[in-house]
Image (cartoon, rainbow, N blue to C red; front, side):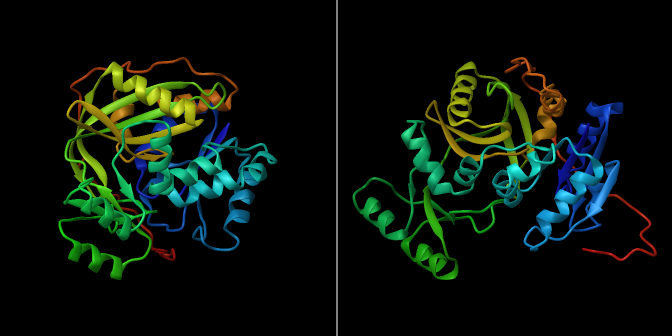
Length: 327
C-alpha cells in the first residue's frame, strides 16, 4: 500500500504520522511545487510538481500514481480538494482512492454563503450571513443585526482578507478594494475546533476530537486544550453523516449563551490535527484500514480532557548545493 500526500508544504507531522502508521506495509510519497517545503523530506519519496493551476498538473499527478502504484491520495490544501473530487473517476481507473468528500459537498464547504444556506436548511445554528452589502444594510436597518461584523471573501482560507468592521464606511472601503465579499455576524463567544473522521466504507462518523481554542495565529490554532461534550459530539456526528462527508473533516464551532454554532467546515486535515493525534484520534490509521477494505470502529470521544497543545517554531536545515532552488 502506497499513499500519496499532495501539497505537503509545512505539514511535517501529518507525513510523519502516516509513515509511522503505515510502517512496513508500504511507502509514503509526497509532492509540492517547491523543494523548500520541509514536509516532503519526511516522506519515502518526493516529487517536485507544477502549481495546481498549470494545465498539465493533473496528468503529472496521475503519472506519479501509476509510477508509484499509489493506493490512496489526499491533499493538504483547499484548492486541490475540488480537483481530486472532480477528477475522482480518473484516479479510480488507476486503482487509486481519492480520500476526499464528493465534489458538490467540497464546493459547498469552500463557498461560505452556500455553507450558511445548507446549515440553515438543516436547522443547525450558525452565524447570520449576507451575500452582499445591500442585503446587510437592510437587515441592519431592520434591527436584525448590528455592528461589529466580519467582512470576508465568499471563498478563501487562512483568514486572508477577513476584517472585523464597525461601520458602513469600512464596509464600503473593503468592497471597493476586493471582489466577492460577504458579511457575517460577529461571533463573540468561545471558539472550538473539531477533528472528525467519517469512514469511507460505511459512511459512519468514527472519530471526533474537540479542542477548546486558546490562541489563534494566521487562521490556525496555536494553543488549545482537549474538551468533551456528548451533546456536541451528537451534533457533529449527525451533521457529517447527513451531509455525506467522507474522510478527514475539520470543523470550527462557537459557543454563545450555551448554544453551539457551526462556523466553517474544511473537508481535510486541519492545522491543529497534531493535538488530536497525540490524544489518540488516529485518523492516519483509520485511512489505512479503509484503504485495506476494512471498516473502522466508532471511537468518538475516546480521549482525555485537559490535554494542551502548544505550537512552537522549528527549522529544517538541508544541504541544497548543486540543486536548483524552487521557492
